[in-house]
Image (tube, rainbow over all chains, first blue to last red; front, top):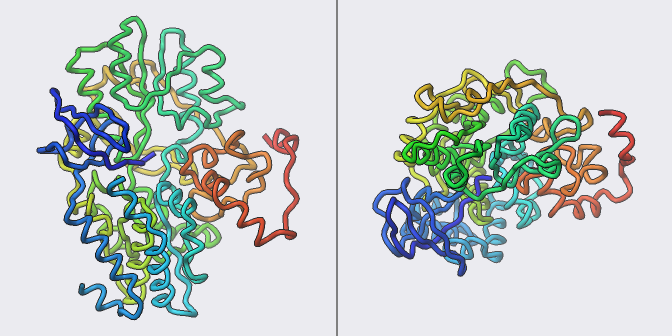
Length: 82
Length: 394
């Protein structure tokens, strides 16, 4: 029910709407809940509304933290400090 | 697909699992509850439980709106839909949820009720606009993730000056449900769910932020790690929980930093606050009546409130007595502990709500986990119930 999927904003439309795509599927959705949406942004889409913008920097940081957590031999404190 | 595929890397998941196994202290048992059905689904679908060491156990929580909606509210919706002037618009998840007397929205639709499955609450507004002779009722359910969209729809209906659009509001709140799980002081020992921490809500938290959990974590001394719904997100959150437990900390931490902030989405919070107010109390399947745990429309929006416009008087109704959904929702039982599971109750013929929604604990276990159970328990089966037993019990 709380499923929300990352979609790319392709075009901004009137009335706080936008055309978005995911894996070749295109849809017009509301972006009224997210400020300053730009074409090229990725937003989380849930029942026809964008909930938030995905932060590309934090997304990369998450993957880096995951890769660090996966390194054998790295202690918990070293991983937390990284 | 960007922001999806990279968080489903199996090799990386196995390495994180190795780190979890290394850091989880042997001789100590770790029991974490994933609150959300979305996490339950990810854990089952990607076999996360198989990656975890034996002393790290995951328990399913009540975070599935379809599952926690009490039977009486489905009965109300069916009664609304049976009115000849009403068109009931609903998310597809609710269509097959069993109501009283073997009814469901699906059966009501087959019997001639005008019930339409929609993708977005905004679609219901457009139907009301296109068909002014119909009285369109939107059957609104969901946690804080879904509420903002309902709020936007009511705002849209107001701007369009529609008089034939109403909302049957069943929106519920996450923090009171977490409190109900943790606040077990007054419960008999057998009904207490003892968990060491929570994998906290993903998309609920995009709206409310991480700060509402801070008081809960402090009061009950349980760590909460807000996590995304992809399998690597869940693995990383479990590792963060293991570390907190090992270090004796009970803080709110955010694994889902690419989407969640401490304060959440302030625009969405404003939209919700403009249109909705707290109910004194609301019934949850499994958790019972919970104070200030749900929303209703404010008086200023009464013209959009289906409960007021149609004088809905909820009659409490009971579940199938053999169904263990209530205990499953509270983490007291696992799906396979229910005698109905996989015998008379399956996604095709659900007896309880947890078997309906794909993120319900029973449906997730049926789809992804039941063969593992069979392999591990094999001979030691309890005798399955026959359909006639259930009808007799009901």
